[in-house]
Image (cartoon, one colour):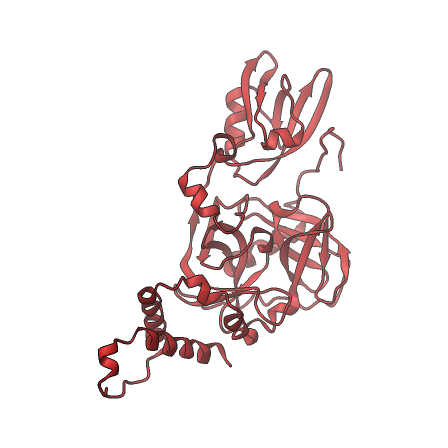
Length: 368
């Protein structure tokens, strides 16, 4: 059954469920067949009347099965990205000779790419766009099927979208909630309390479960730089850290005794240090949110229920056109995607090496 036909069936079922009992006892004149836009409005109205949560009607197996045709082409270009033998993100092939686009901050180690045919190949991070949290991976492969990003995909608020996985059916289905807009920046937190010292910002306290603790930063360390940008004092360091978002990984220059170290640390949000507020708690119900879910210059929002480790791959419309790449699970029913028009502008820079990431370093300061 085609997606549009399936939607018509859903509308008919919803209207039948909400019909007034008194009206059922009277003969009614036949109503004209509604247009697709009218049908969509009727369907949403029916959902509200019978109090059925939207996700139950967009994430069931019958609904996903109706979108097989929509994902048939794109699914051959979708990969899984693994770090330490664990799937951390999805991705999409954007070049036939081994170019793969995915979500940058999910890459917690050396990436491996699992192709649709089951092959697993080592990936090298050749470019990272921090503002959109995108990473370009290069694998040793040729002749790969590639996502069509040169089309101008049609998508309006209220349109159905399908997140593409590796199977014949979509991984999840949802509705476009908000057209592309800027997602405001939220300040990143390292998780240390600082004091001024003659040599720079000195660590007076390391908060538990913070990026600083995970990185191996210790009390009395002197923090000298962020991503090789010198920070002369406490204020400079705080300002530089806050220019990054929760989920971003930074390289912190550290002086410890007579040693100079470079430690990698993942920033968190303030709730990690002071505890979640009511809104944070409600948004986290049902699934873990993406660490990096703020500060995108342009992103569309849809209501697909998508785990954080399933972000990084393409989302398509009913015609199978790639509307964007899922970039963050931002709330209980909020997922962000970077529009295809933005992706096209970024591909060359990501492939060129001009956006190569800083060298990774381990907890003991050794390059890796």
